[in-house]
Image (tube, rainbow, N blue to C red; front, side):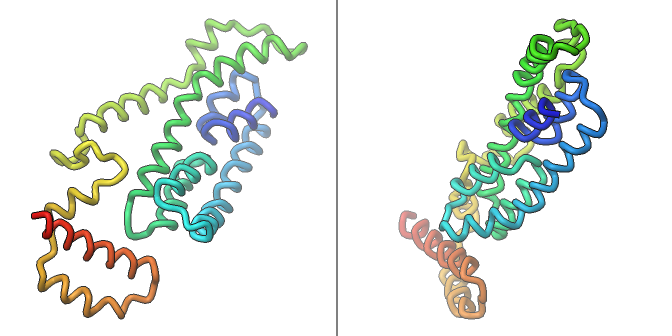
Length: 217
């Protein structure tokens, strides 16, 4: 129980639990308790993290790093990030990078648990380390690494979509779709109809950035 719970809570949630369970010969009930704990924690944090983030006036990068580290399940990380910033994806991108990067630690944990289980558990059956490495290694980690590499090359994005700015591509979009003076005037006239403070602030930034691009042009 300690092996799967520490792997799941300390690394990357359900994936780590499933990968570590055969190594420490965890029972199905122990796996179920661990997965339930991880998912229940994530449900609470989806609602609590955004509230705390706004209370502490966190930015997208700050909150994304915190949520990606503190919430284990990737889907729940995405939910918390979008709840914190519903009008953009900067927070979501940072949070998922931090969350998925934790998966890269999983092979180290699995191998370490294999040695730990054989050495520390007096009642443990003889475990063939070579067999564990070959048979229990979380192969899906290679899939994550491959997709990271392909995404970095721009395979999954339009040409020059990111331009190397992985956490903020707002400048690219603004340069492609600059607002005209007449459009800015309409937005200013309609701004009073917005009820949420964060949307009012987002509109003000959009207008200001558009003006800056026009001035530089």
